[in-house]
Image (cartoon, rainbow, N blue to C red):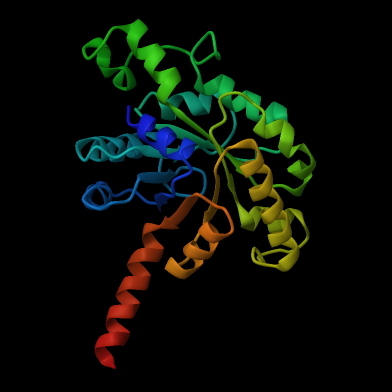
Length: 253
């Protein structure tokens, strides 16, 4: 389980480069494995990918020794479990707006006594060959990364309680949904929205937990880091389109 590397980087305040896919492509995952990105982020909430396709991509990442974080579609134990059992290094749980939301996520991701994750002993546990069930369960609880998505203005007053939840490793801001919840539809970079983002970053740094934001390009990513973010997400589609456009425009000039 490669989540231990991610958790170590989070705890040492290092920048984590998180490249996201919303589509099924083991080839893209394999290619990203040859780069210095820190992990692959599979979006099973907004993307078209299902559990079986995620499992294919996790296998491709395993061959390249890359951690995989999967954003699940909902904060429900039976849904989270299916993505854990395919071997994800960590889970990104959407719509964390209260202490109860965060506790529900941790409870679903951790085995007992820290949570109530159901045990099956399949792919995630190496089919019982790599290590004993006891060793696997203990390691999974140590190494599986738990990330919350902060996307709703109603949660801003609950940030200290959310961040105090034991087992929550990081909080990523979803600026699009946050903007909608604030009455600024499709305006994630509106100044009022960004004031809330700054508050989330400040609360996270006070709690000693990293904050994440999506970036559209390198300059925006640098600005995020300068303001205190440590988990930077950029989509593979954005990288592909941006690189292709820059190449074509540059050559034509």
